[in-house]
Amino acid sequence: MKRLNWHNIRLVLIIVLMIFLYSFSMKRNNERLLKSVNISFADDKDNYFITHEMVNNLLIQNSGKPLSIKKEKVDLNTLETVLDDHEMIEKAEVFSGIDGSLNAHIKQKTPIVRYVSDNAKYYLDSKGDRIPLSENFSARVPIVIGQINDAEKSNYVYLFNEIAKDDFLKKSITGLTILPSGSVVMTNRDYDFKIIFGNPIHVDKKLKNYKAFYKHAIKDTLIKNYKSVNLLFTEQVVCRK
Image (cartoon, rainbow, N blue to C red; front, side, top):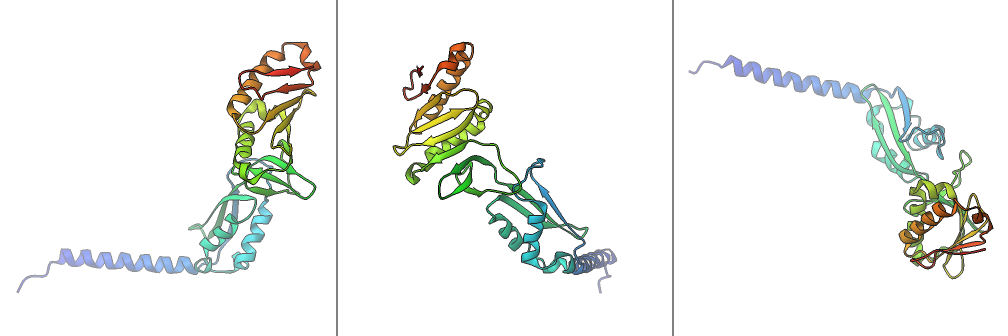
C-alpha cells in the first residue's frame, strides 16, 4: 500500500479552503447594501449640459433607490445602456467598487455648432447628432441658420468640424447661413464683411485660403472697408469693397 502523500493532500486542502473563502467573500460582498453613489465626468470643466443631479435621477429611476439595494441586485449593464441612450451623453461607464460604491463615469457630448430655425433649435456634435439645448449651460459655438440637406449633411458637418478644430476659426467664425442653393455664407467676429464660402466642397483649401487672406489683410487698415470675401475660387480670394 502506497504511503499517503501529505504534501499533495495539504495542497488540495489549501486550494479548497481558498475557493471556499473566495466564494464566501464574494457572497458577503454581493449581499452588501450600496454605501454611496459616485458620479464623475470625463472632463474637468464646470460647464455641463448634464449635471450630477440629472445622472443621479436617471440611476434612481432605473434601479430604485440605489442605497437601499444589494450590490448583486444592481444591473450595471442596464444602467450603462440607459445613460448611453441619453441625448447629452456620448459614453457612460457604470461599475461597482469593492468599497460598496456605485460609480458612473460620464463623457458628455461636445457641441460644435448651434442650429436655429423657426421650428427647431439644437446643437450638433462632431458626428452630426443632435444635442438638445440645456438650461444648465450655453455653449459658445457658431450659429447655423438655414436648411441642411440630408444628402449633403456629412459635408456640412465636416465644415463645422474643421472650424471647431482650428483655434483661429473657432474664435473668428460666429455664424453660418445655408442658402436655398446649399451655398454657405459666414460671418466673423471682428469685421462686417461676409465670407462667401459656397457649397461645402474643397473645404480644407477654402479655409486655408481664408486664413492666409486674413493674416495678410489684418496688416492693412483697408480690411475694415471690405463688404465681402469670396472663397469660391480655390486659387484666389476675391474681395469686394
